[in-house]
Image (cartoon, rainbow, N blue to C red):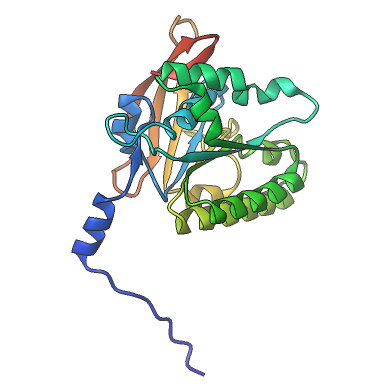
Length: 266
């Protein structure tokens, strides 16, 4: 039996035109934009740290920026989805998606909070199996709604980190990322995941937890480390670990600002 694999060839000009017409969303930080070249539709981004101040700021800022107009404001002018991995028994850990704080972030970005709320879907997941179920529901949502351009998986490695059976947890995480990554690539949706750093790993820059698959699946990976805990303005060193167009590692300074009792990228 002939098992030849067929594939379609594209010219360099076709690839150039496709890349030139690809939408990019601002991160809300000029320094982070410069480091990763913005958030591009269809790519998988992994941002990880052990300081959730900066990760929460990313989630808030990105959800609002997704709704911003393409022209002048450099948004996606589209709808966004957030799969929020949270502790069912401790609602304080879901604060990153507090509606009041999303409203504050919207006002800081100069957009009516009602417009943002109308264009966001939030799906909480409370354990590993529920995470997989919600991921399948999110996949159906993206397939049926071509207005979605951003999917954020907040604290993607939460259940892996807390699991006693790391092999089983890694397999579930691989399945979740696999089905979400495929649907996002197929529909040109930017996939953004936030997660924890491996504090037990050796080396100057810790690796993201979650197994090798997560590291290989992401197109762009950035690690954040706090510069100083004594400064009144939180600042971080953002290190680009992986990027398909840029030589790595490469670093930039990142600042967050306090607005209405919350932190946003500056």
